[in-house]
Length: 335
Ligand code: HPA
Ligand code: ZN
Image (cartoon, rainbow, N blue to C red; front, side, top):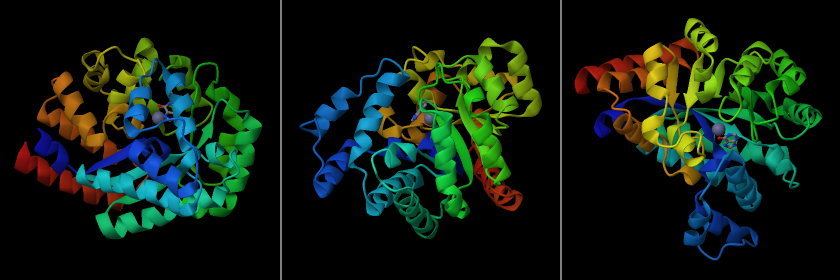
């Protein structure tokens, strides 16, 4: 199974680039930039990654970002991700980034985008990975600040494919961001949003109906609403699920309890991603391997999930068709 998983061409569509900051790099960048950390060692950092819910993770996630200051830092961060993704057979990635978590610390928007973009260009040449950027709005901050961030992004729209919505979900419904999403879509950006991770199925509906999103990030709690689930199937809405993240943040108790397989059986277009792999104990390959094991996925089901990941990308039809043909070839050989 591991060989099949690695060999399948895959897309990763739910990964926060700031969530790929490994403790080792955190220390390297802290030293390079003269930033003080409250931790004495990598082991101490890892020991602090014991989360009880989404917020307990977000607090330490925003804290860790303090070491990211220069274009080179953002470049190095993304480059390290692409290297890992390459070994897992990722051929296309759509990376979330949180500009407000940086501009709020006086790091200019363009520093972030230029650093990430440089790594994206290199990844294509070095690893044969294509990548796009998804600008995420922090939903715990006011919608006016999201709009100001979108305006800051306007000169860089050739480097940004879509907008997303992340951070603390409960109490911050998609409905708060209707205006900024309308503006983003008018500017030609695609749209996704985190919904139904900790928030209710109603937030998934709002993301679809009010924000016009093309994918739902997580969507775990959609299952609580049968009519919504039926709609996701009917409309073919992809759910970018992140099983190891859901265990670490106690969205589910155990991986064996995850609803990914039930949703797959019901006809939902589910995919497997890593979310914040430096914090949640595994990159995309590990997410596939552990989920396949815990839910007893068949080889055919694993191929279906990889296929879903490619079909759900923002790539054009020709690029999708090329990767899908490769999946057929790998499946014929290894299934
Ligand atoms: N949920 C919401 N916001 C986030 C996450 C997540 O899993 N990771 C990084 N920001
Ligand atoms: Zn996420």
